[in-house]
Image (cartoon, rainbow, N blue to C red; front, side, top):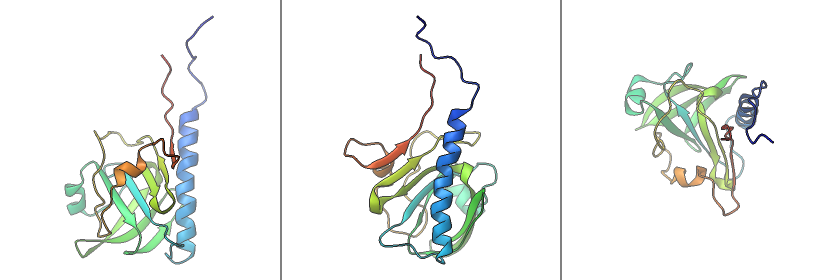
Length: 167
């Protein structure tokens, strides 16, 4: 009997990643439909690769966050527009407004701490960072994002999908 798993000709990992990114799009679309009003205590930490194709952020933010950045959609955001491929949002960074365009393919984590829900994604960009992105870059309250997006044994609803080959 052979213990090795054969290589799949079906890209399951890409299909699952795309489906999970669609969850982010659907949630953001619901917020867009309510003119940016978040229900209850919901708020979102969204981590993305700043150098991924299609990402558009101001040059000063790109310089501060050359690899990965976390933004918070809570109280201080506006002009949220969601499309099939990504979203655009305006945020304040050190009291300076900035418009960001983020494709869903650039997102590496999505967390809603109000309900202990999180998704982690394989990076779709050409380069991977070595470790967490640090605190959120925009003017929202700072929180410990990394502990919320790490899978834990406490029953929190974190989903991480990794289709590495079995050896």
